[in-house]
Image 1: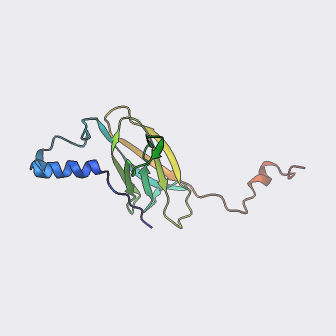
Image 2: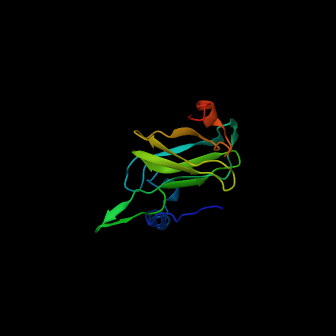
Image 3: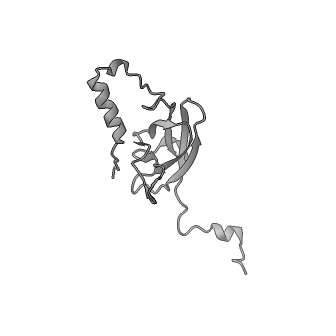
Length: 155
């Protein structure tokens, strides 16, 4: 099941203004700056199976959750700051992140058996960041690891 979130309204306004001004081929807002002129970075890479890192995890949902917005005593959250679904080979790309510490959340595809992860990444300069994220499967329910750690059964 694919998840989708609406784009922030400010991008819609920016695109409309850009089209109206006919500046799309030479727009001042490049990939390294947001509409407010702040530097931005892209986090990209691959989501892989921890048991075999040569195998990418397809259709995982990778996103940076919004920061809560506080106003008049209420907390409101907007859509994710960046989001993507992994490709058939596990590739993902999160664009437009500010210079800050962000949490990247990976939700595995439904029925895959993988456990989701949250990872913090800090963008301290306007340089794109490449990351490989490994997903693990939980041990089977009848795993006897506890017996190996304490063979007496705790007696």
